[in-house]
Length: 190
Picture (tube, rainbow, N blue to C red):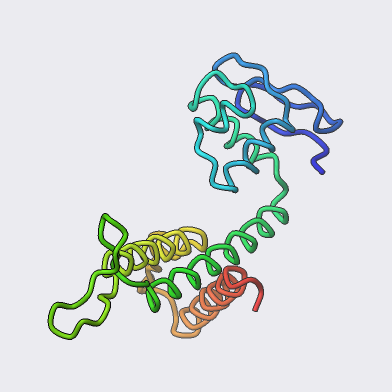
């Protein structure tokens, strides 16, 4: 659990623990543990409005600030663990969406009757369900890219003309090693 000093924009939480009070920017006093709880609710896909209602904040804006402050209070190794858990959850959702895409069921009329092909008499596959599954897969892919920083702008390296070939190879080797470490970290360590 969190211990120590944390800067929260409006003040410092002095060394003790999670039951210290911090100042939320709109003047509302919030407990660090409440901010961490807000971050946990957001990780469970609660909307900011629902977080505000659940934790007694005055608005969704205050809830959003509390989520940010809660995320800042979580130690970085815990953030990596949360990232791994979210990654697993997104992959589970993607598998479920693929199952729906592959077996969407049959189209049903408004009156609850299975719609059949007028020529063959076979039940028609529900294409709207398939399209919804595809949209969900696109959204999940987008979230996975954000989670792992794949959509982040690429960093480029400029080589100064006065560098020797050996210096360029050394810089390139360091960049490749950093990229390899980042890929291992993004992939969950292996």
